[in-house]
Length: 207
Image (cartoon, rainbow, N blue to C red; front, side, top):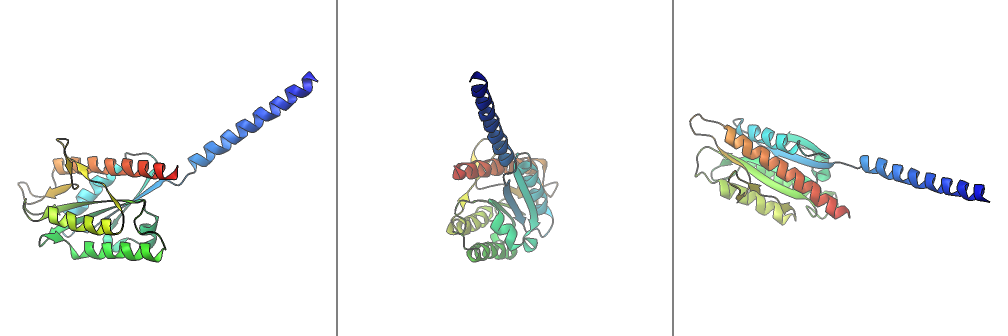
């Protein structure tokens, strides 16, 4: 009798351990958080900021990052993205025509996929401009308004003084011209923040 009880307990413990192992394997095989960083760069400056954003995002575990020029992004990449970051140069006080066309494609791709557009997804914007008063806020707000209309949750940045911002920016007509180390640090900090918050958001939505 005692032997039979011991055998039953052994089988029960084996089953519990097997279930725990299967659960761990399933968790490890879970789909990573997908982040799409799409940018339009006319002179190469916005591309440099995009690369720094990617570097920051890559520091977060369980995140898969796709870095693409806006005209190279596929509809499938848009639909699969848990978070989308758009980078644009400021042109005539607004986002570039190429960046605007990408936003139109985001709405079209999500609409055709039968989703609730950006519901449950994160979005953010960064920009570059030649001068300090070229319309950076207007450009970012135009893109943010489009993302909000598509029901995305917007993630802003945090500057090196600890204050919130609309997202990273770089003024490239300084001396020396181009993207400087401070701009890159801001972009990396933002990339980490965006990836971390997107991962947290999706984890919370899955519960």
